[in-house]
Amino acid sequence: MVQQVTRGIRISVNTSFEGTLLKNLGSRFAFSYHITIENQSNDSVQLTSRFWKIKDALNHTEIVQGEGVIGQKPVLKPGESHTYQSGCLLNSPFGSMSGYYNMVSFTSTRKFRVKIPTFKLSAPFAVN
Image 1 (cartoon, rainbow, N blue to C red):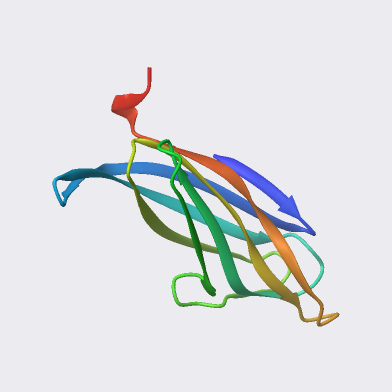
Image 2 (image 1 turned 90 degrees about the vertical axis):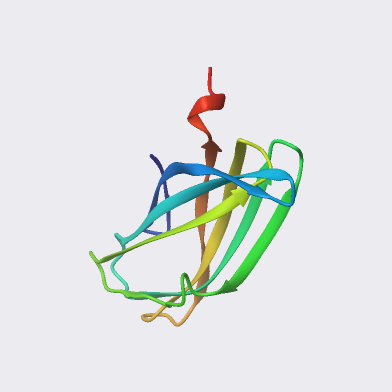
């Protein structure tokens, strides 16, 4: 598990290898990630959007950005958390993801970014 705290918001990430898919005569490697967003601040906040940089071992980078997470824009009061699971496909059995969430504080109405720590994706059969 990797964790990062930004402005009182803790991001925790666990990853899993889900399997290999054959697509267009090539292999794709499926990974899932489980993220918990915990509000350790004194303000209520809302996650409004996300930005991801997904890299594989073949030097391919994919940028993903959009509203909320899995169709939701969770509001977190102090002490609350939101957990979700998503996934990605890579062209290699190794890679990494990093990014940030855009959030807004209900107390100050200020927008801020919460860093998502870089986490590694690796298929267990390829690890020595």
